[in-house]
Image (cartoon, rainbow, N blue to C red; front, side, top):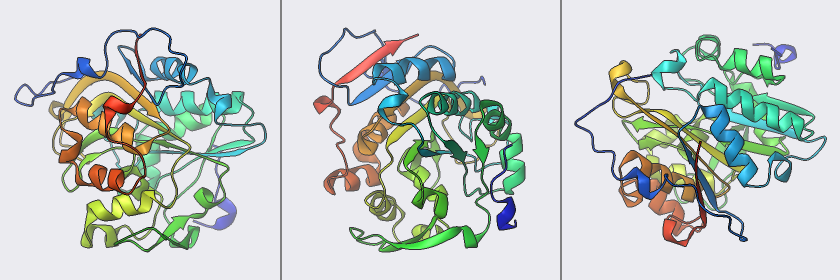
Length: 304
């Protein structure tokens, strides 16, 4: 794609044999007001856009994160050429509402992109995200050409010491990370830290050189300003692309936090796993990038 064209304006089924764990420990009753700021908000029981409204308001509104005139990058999962009901990509309703909140907060522009796995124009279109972005007033950006990426140094990386990062991330005032919770054949789970693989070009190196360490290493380079985990429909097996609707459980949940380790730990619990079962969570915790100890967090649990 030519650089002058760089910016374009633009569920059901259950798996009974998989244990989901006690999700009410994380998401359940509406909590009472706490004078302390929340580290994480967990919402259950509504459509993705409505759950996000409640979550962002609980954190003080989008104006707490986005200021007038700022350039915002929203990074969902758009990696796969499948429809929204397959839960391989972030729900377009959620992406649309996030953009609307950013623009209402005064953002100069909101850019959305992913370095997709399937052919990028089909991913953007068939995921429903391109339409959602345009309807919300955002702009779609491609990530399909190496010339869009610039080499950076990952100073705190142990295995990953450099990476080629998309230039709109490097030029963003605000970076909002919007992964979908799902099974992943190599990383066990896709969540916030794993979603960073869609902002780099040379991710093949990660797969060949201790994937979990590389995921944690890169998180030390650029922590998002806000992480929003889509758990409306969750792919419980055969990730990251999935095989069919039988892979999906409807959880109707959403998590939001500025702490990338905490949200991944909470996402693991929601999926039915112990956070320590996901190596990159433990590594990132030990690197001081956030906390995996949910008992230390002030969590606001909401129900639509």
